[in-house]
Image: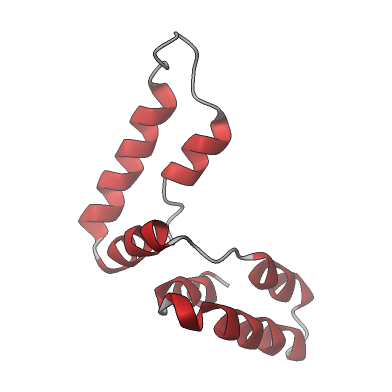
Length: 97
């Protein structure tokens, strides 16, 4: 499934929805309902996230640097002394895709 998600997040934004539908249908047809469900649940990225995804997919160094940025965000207190919400950090740090 990781390859399918990489393929999905690599395409142009205007092609995302059609490819997501195609990949989910292919997974369902081969009897992989869990993968079909995960692909169907993949959200179309914003334009900014799309650019970061493409860079991370194409350059291992950038992927490592983004992962480090996510770790620093996770560990950094907010201006008011509180930690950032975990959901913000998860969205900021790449997952290897």
